[in-house]
Length: 435
Figure 1 (cartoon, rainbow, N blue to C red):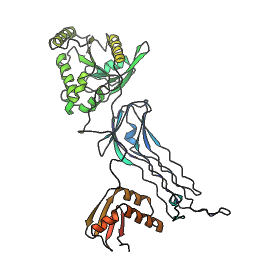
Figure 2: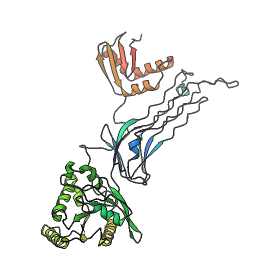
Figure 3: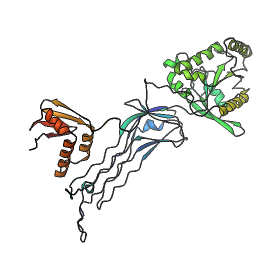
Figure 4: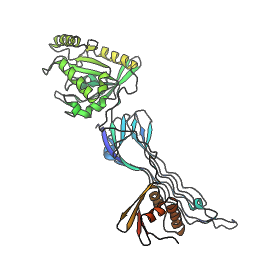
């Protein structure tokens, strides 16, 4: 089964907790604090595997959580870092943040990797908080929580050549005779509803990947028919083979078909109209095909498209197919492997997602809700999540942080007095004026 879109949840592993420990060994003078740091949580890493061609694995597993780091140990020993969780994805996968709609990565090369869920840092043990004024601190940190998010995976098939055209013009038949692929073939429209890939060997050590893409109809750029489900796959192909029913078996004008399909490509992405394209005039073994081909050439000349290359073929009878493949192989040697067009996105703008912090976490805001002052400060909220507020040393550290950050003075200016409640994240306490 071919699946080219999936939504999954990823979470980096939590960091291991630091511990509180003291050395009390015989013959060890001044043992002091010896609580080690926790290990780092594992990252969730997407790695490209060229052996995969679909996102079907993500239909059955939608949650990926990396392991957490190990807790710190006694005698100042660190906990072990957790191993990263490697998630294999097919080449051509675009990873998009579900909340911001920003592109995290565009994965195209084998073994290419990207971290989509960073593991949390390990918490510090009490030996890290030892100072001359407090040589035996009873204080440690919890591990930092791993990054979590929902991401959308979109697959755009990585093929050298894409077969485009109206339904039932013979694209699937052509792929079946030039490769070992076995696409569904039937005497009705839309027998192909997902891309089929096949490796074409033209001899002399030359080969390329060909994709039989679902048939287009007028209005596809607006989602009519298979619409965008097909068009996004065209963007990855380096060469387009436009397959036409030159026998006009469905009483359509081949030239009109050619114009309509190219217009759909242009409307979907203006730069697709600049993609190298050759025409496969199919079904030449049927009556009337020669006359239609002659008219087709005349119309191309009339409208200024005389430079278009046309290869009369019959996919069923395998006539003219070899010449078409040789020409495709020659053109591919001249076309760079890098994407030739900017890819279309569904939202107004998508930027590359970066993990660097773009705002100052020490900035804070204070608002009043009745007799409670609500403080919003990213840095302090993170500290409260990591420190166990059940010891004297932890409370003293929190007080110092409130003074140095300017929050305490700002609370007084806002009118905070003894007895007023202050809430920071999930932590709530009573404001006490220092003497």
